[in-house]
Image 1: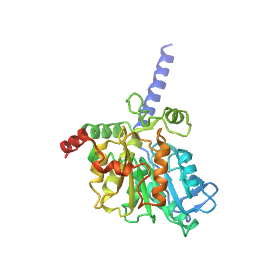
Image 2: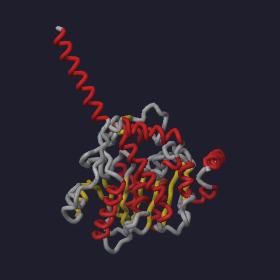
Image 3: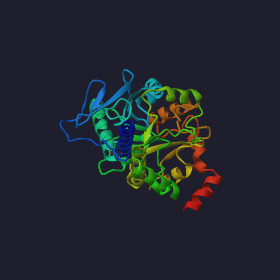
Image 4: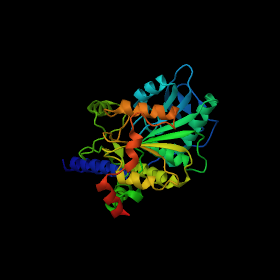
Length: 340
């Protein structure tokens, strides 16, 4: 009996040790060596390394412009179903693809790295332009997708697009975090990179739409357990987006909701101050983080569709005029002043 107990103890210890070692191994899946030119495959953009990015497209018979939509963190191309339908009715062809490591891509849940995400976007833009050579091409990025757009547009080789819309862009970089937040991130991502967390219990709400939140919770493609090293990768992306701002020359519309609990107002304000020429800002008093899927999502969708068609015209909702006082309220302004 003692021998069996000892054997059981060794098995348990070995299992715990292997689990710990696995959890302590940081992982990424950057693009592999280029094997061929990127191409549009069957329902997927195929990158130079052969990696497939599944996409959907909604388009009228005779589109007046093209939109490439990038989803947020842990999400997938299905997030754009309603905007795709609305913008298609407005005359826009809308492509939405799963970014590497998300949705139905290989290695789902493993961070690909900032250069890979931005290179993938550049390849997708080139493929879409080749398909629609006579049409304007626009980008719309939500949260993490907005950060990917920013990092790409501020790079040495920005994608060839006419305008971009950033919806609640993920810009909570290390330069806009508290010291404790930075320490916690560095500790957990280095000590336990493979451990996962759900974010439950933090009391953070992404939208005022219960239907949206329930749908995301039941969605098998939405990632609900996030590795700590993937969270660190997201912050690396937010750093890249923040640092890219002075180099961005593309015309932008930035959307932000006053109730956003995921991207702090102070981070958005500090990011906007880095632009040489401030982008157009649309501020939604009743908006949360998932602006396109909030209760007032149809209003935001219509605003963006109209702006993409006629960027020199006021937004139908007046959200651009609402932003004249700045992105933060009085209490937030004092917080910005305190942080410097």
